[in-house]
Image 1: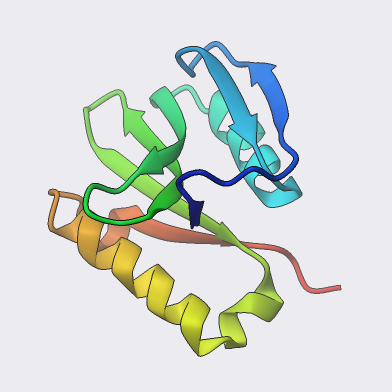
Image 2: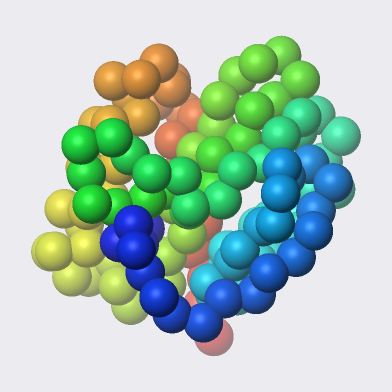
Length: 114
């Protein structure tokens, strides 16, 4: 999750399943986009999707071939310990559940332990 007008460094790429230019802001987001773009059941990928009524965006929203929506919030393991970050993740989860996304289709993508 990021603020809507986040001005940090990003990698801009053209990805077939993403309309326009796909902007990724960290390794986790980039790797998830790469993984999802190879998945044949993914129809469309959207990155940094604004959540109405919030100053934040969700990292990745996918539309599957069966029109199911799957949301991925990408985060680093060390951020999960912060109450403020957990609150933001909960805000995202509530937002998407309120917009028809099923509980099992709201997901976290977390970096691997080293």
